[in-house]
Length: 127
Image 1 (cartoon, rainbow, N blue to C red):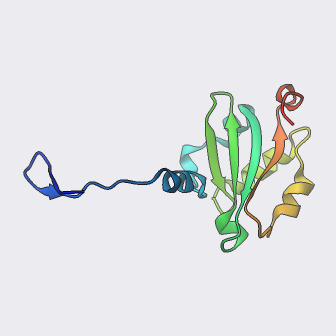
Image 2: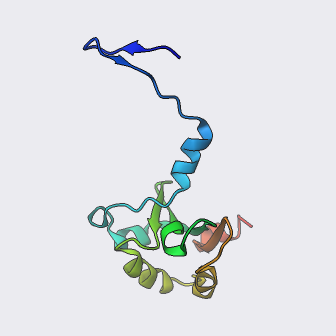
């Protein structure tokens, strides 16, 4: 691909990212800034809780929660995020949350997505 001039006349080489690298970036644990997440509100709006584990590095650095909310957004929270402790405390109070399964996932060396909780109205529709 050739150089392209921007509005200031400077040459720039456009960067093309393959779709797979975009997907990989999405699924990498990317904790949000602690102040930007209201854990109580987030937990009130949850529809599904998944954990993503990875075979790379330590579980704290390469595992994360994927939290699906009623607005159809996914919110990643890394296990080593500052809000992870408060999040886990709230999740454990939710009826049907599989905290024993969460403990089993700590240190899991496999690449996987595991469902730990679904809103009861959704649980019967997905299996």
